[in-house]
Image 1 (cartoon, rainbow, N blue to C red):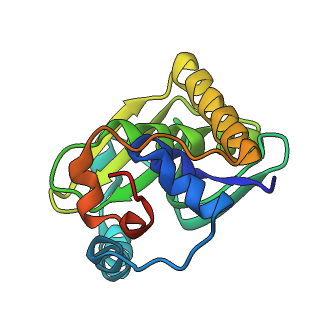
Image 2 (spheres, rainbow, N blue to C red; image 1 turned 180 degrees about the vertical axis):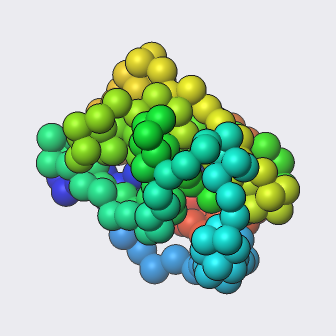
Length: 190
């Protein structure tokens, strides 16, 4: 199997079938309105973020790097981080989210996967990261604990095993997610 994408971890928690379709049954999918909206918002966020002070992240100083591609053969993981803040206080991954609610479990695991990549690529510990909620203009900080990192690695293994077995996983129990899913036409049992 090729490298797993960080986004796959987020999708796995949202609905594991999304990851299954992407690897085991690649089909043409229709972009959802949220995907399209996210692309539009990305440019605006980049523009605004360059002018913001780091105090929104409770950091005194640091250098920002946008759209940082990270890849690790050792972890079998790759992804493009929205924002990396390299501060004397540490490395901080920032993942922008277009959501009206707060960060969800899948967002935290995605952030943790970025932390694992940063640790491998930069050989520095990464213990905190941020999910930036675009509509609220708010950076929510998360402790990226050893336990959370271990759980993220377990999920990576689970994704690899699912793809190798080519066995469709059960659908998400939260069926309201199916309404706007780009793969909903391929799930015949929901």
